[in-house]
Structures are given as structure tokens and as C-alpha cells.
Length: 134
Image (cartoon, rainbow, N blue to C red):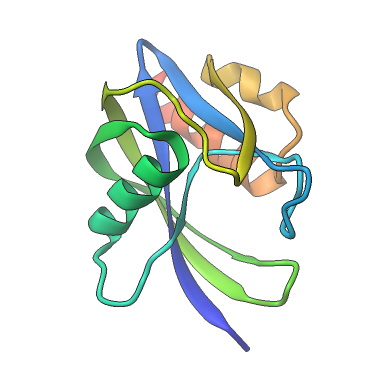
């Protein structure tokens, strides 16, 4: 079984969070909304990987505030991933999406319930709201 580690960022700006929509031709959960992130490369720390992934997928510079959640999932190709989500604050830049995503939005966290996504991410955003918007 393939195994990997992923990092994700809940990026905050002016009370909103950034969400991105996976490309409709993506092999894993096409058209699903998610937070920005991806896999950790060999010899990368989680923080370095998250800064790289956020820059690659959104073009933004962020400050990583703290680890927020640990999760796991199995990709459609059978790879098992452990993930770490960090809360991040936007520092600079305008969103420029990579080919991995087709849309983005800065939304109020409570509006995430209206988006097509995996249940575990809906649960994570609810936990985020309880901690930071409660």
C-alpha cells in the first residue's frame, strides 16, 4: 500500500477563508471544494511543504499560525494519506490558481456547508468555526 503525508492550510483573510475547487478532470474527487495543500516531498518539513503548496496552488504568501487538525483518508487510487491542517493568515498576493483547481472563493466559514466537499472537511471547517468564530 502506498502511504503519504499531506499538509493543508485554512487561510484566513478579513474573517473569510480561502477555498478552491478541484479541476473537473482531476483523478481524485473532481469538482470538490477544498482548502489549499498537498503532499510533503522527501526531506521537507510540514511548514516548508505547506508554504510551497500554498504558493504553487494559489500564489499567496501566508503566516502559518498553528497546527489545527490531523486527519487521514484513502485516495481513489488506493494511496493512504495522513494529513495535518494548519491555520494560516494571509500576508500578501492575489489568488492565481494552478491547473489543479478551476475556481476559488473567499467565504465566510459557515457558508462552506453549501459547497460540494467530503464530509471530513465539512467537519473540520465546523471545528474551525467552533474554535475561532465561537
